[in-house]
Image 1: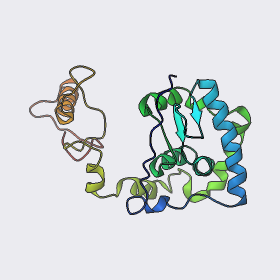
Image 2: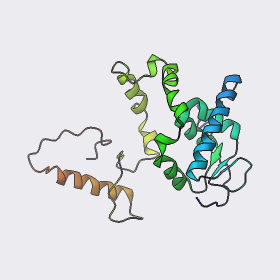
Image 3: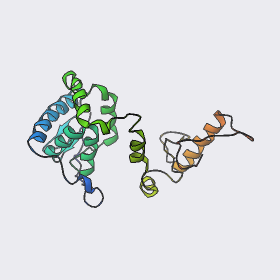
Image 4: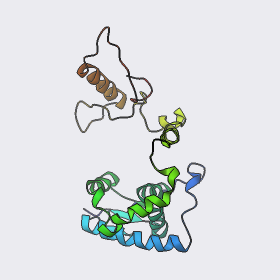
Length: 207
């Protein structure tokens, strides 16, 4: 990947993300962070992603490496995202960098680390496992949030999935693209006068 100027960290903690103010710490956290650092460096090197820990220009700039690796080791991909929210790392071309990482998501961990995933899953505890008994609580944890929260990142139709744009790249209004998608779905499903339709999970009823 090409190297461009390093971004400036923009931490988003405090009142907005109070649960992220405390990074994992302690002897165990330091040990697992060291292992996470080794895995991360090997993976990014193999993918051609340049990583900087001293503020120099790179594809990924670690402003606070210790925090980044601690969060990554404790919470995996969730920790990776949380470290971005706190400003522990940034990327000049975020979309491009994440695309490269996601193309080989299953191969980011080496074989020995893949085999340890079972140990990690057991450590999470029975409550966190995605079983039928836990499903209702998990769904509530994900969806029982305020409409104001979802409105922060959804368009006015409050639709979950991507819109259908007339061309790409596009400056077209997202709500217009969402209505085009909805019309296409209804046409493909041959919905017309007299149709009885059960709509589940497309958002807040825009369909």
